[in-house]
Length: 450
Ligand code: C2O
Image: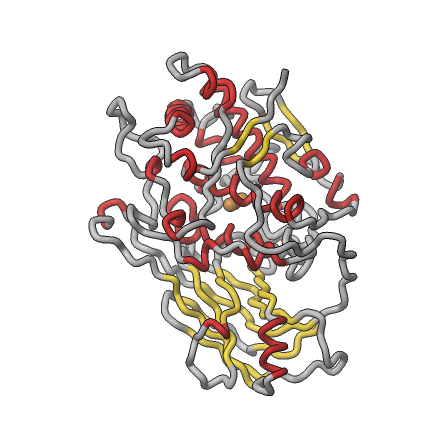
């Protein structure tokens, strides 16, 4: 009889003591996958190349980003990777039966107590119990004792989106196949922005780039958490996935399992973890109250830009601000949604620093109090391609309404960027890469109403 696989919270496992069986089995499987030649589809190098690679083929260089295929594609990718790992684990005769037969990918839940924002200990230990070097430990910006900045790990704003597609939506823009920003409409959804992109940037190292992300064994636990948050959004919060055929059956993706067999899937094949995919998460309780249940999704309205910078700005790891004038919308006094937008962001090298973003009025008021906090920007993926560049949108409807209500809204605003620096812990420097702010060019900062 088939049983459902359970993907556990990595912190539940770590609480069992040093080297819990599921993580030890994972470490040994990763070790085995690292030994295989790069051309072997089961090797870690090949699996990372499925995500991003210099040469594209049917299997490689396929990751879907800044698109409504982001969530389904990564769910498929994880599912087949997990199958490959399970094949290795099943062959380890000295590992207990239970672990060998039921192995499932854990998830890194960084949304609990502050300490959950640390790299889990099994990914930092120098060696396995038998003394061989730990394959789960790779170079990262976030070292032992460091914590992800709280705003990088915060999923509450993403989970509060009540639409899947389009600007401000949970799941990303309606696009065709979109590996990076080649579709003119490409735009990440709120979950992809934070915590997905922000955690990529700050963990840094391999995680900072499309082509190397999968080489960090922690990448897969990060994505299991992102996948779990999709399940939280649909099952626990009652929101709906797109019903359009363009999403459900419009694109097919091909993967190989642990035995080398090919599998072609579409979004419709990965709508939910149970019963469709036979795995479930240890916990899918929502960190916020119900949002979507019983609601009819409101129709989209056309958007209008009501103010923007007229030249680009640079983010190089220091505080920075953009000032611009805003004219009230000619068409609507009471917009349904207001967004702060960053358009055409590009970076020559991976920018592994995130920025807390604040909208302040009047524009010469330098304070960055929580009341002006808008969200956290990551530029993961901004190095890719020649398309429209990375475009981010933060929902500022509540802030806008509050300032208007209090008669504090003004016709000049400032958007302030404050770098999220990792504060190195004592003794952590040895295993910590320098944080790379990169050189990000943001083409335009503006405010859009819907
Ligand atoms: Cu396709 Cu987290 O990356």
